[in-house]
Amino acid sequence: MGQLSILLTLLFYIAFSSAVAVDHDGARLARRITRGSLQQVTNFGSNPTNVGMYIYVPNNLATNPGIVVAIHYCTGSAQAYYSGSPYAQLAEQYGFIVIYPSSPYSGTCWDVSSQAALTHNGGGDSNSIANMVTWTISQFNADTSKVFVTGSSSGAMMTNVMAATYPELFAAATVYSGVPAGCFVSSTNQVDAWNSSCAQGQVIDTPAQWASVAENMYPGYTGPRPRMQIYHGSVDTTLYPQNYYETCKQWAGVFGYNYDSPQQTINNDPEANYQTTIWGPNLQGIFATGVGHTVPIHGTQDMEWFGFAGESTGGGTTTTSATTTTTSKPTSTTSSGGSTSTAVAQHWGQCGGIGWTGPTTCVSPYTCTFVNDYYYQCL
Image 1: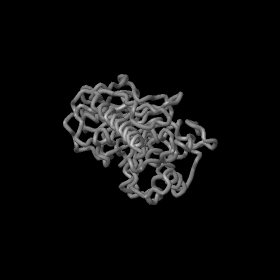
Image 2: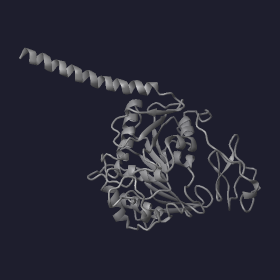
Image 3: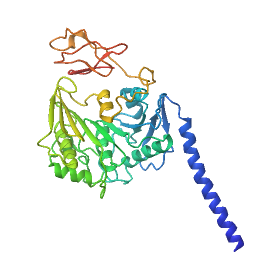
Image 4: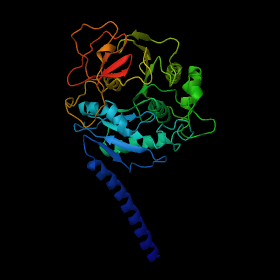
């Protein structure tokens, strides 16, 4: 018995020491992350589909910071979304951390088709991304009431999936040109499958049916769900505009709103040729007339939707390592009416395009950059 007792004590000590070492390794990694630059994290926990995790911790990190998960488009990567989106710059201003997941698949779309991805703790891409969030919360003592998710195109699809599969993690989401959660489901349970019927807007259901699809991704969950803001363009030929209506139906059904009777519709909001429809405090749809795939990121509106506006840490003028490729706007493609205003557009604001009558000059040092014929943006 004496030898057995010694052996059991030794085994307990080894197991305890290993657990502490793993915890300390994670803590040391968090301390080693260089602020103000994109960093890869490889030991954030279970990663069933080998999704890449990249993180941006701002120089002006807030106490108990918020988190924004920014999910890239097809053909994209964490690095590309870091460079081409405003979230790193906004992180310096508002002090939150940005997580940039990177898809593991050829073509780099996200798996929003398999049952694993469409199920809470199902072992798909959504599971890996959720584990990135919980790791970041733990390592940086983040504010769990200020965790948000956003994405463009395939990343917008995954944003809807994350809101459905892990509603307990997120306070709000912004979706740029996606499809409803579950719309891309594969009848053969294929991973990372394309669904032409959904993409072309042919999958049409009632709000109750769509709500059931989302709710069945986390059976039995009765807690709060993230507020949803849905953007889509009227001339999107990749993910047809019908997907805007179906996505709004889905979340209206989840929140118990009457889809056919929104509370308010606001024209030319947040800018010319955009229309904002409000069903209630948890759901807004923003339809962009003349805009294709995808709707440009509206960083200022994102910060308002997430609740960061007014919480600046004073880092708004800090230069970050994020870069954006720009092309100067030709003078022949300004708005059809031509603006005579002496006003200037702010960073990330619209500065041109067919039908645009607002300012066509950007505040220094930003450049009015072509996005599509209907939209130029200060980048």
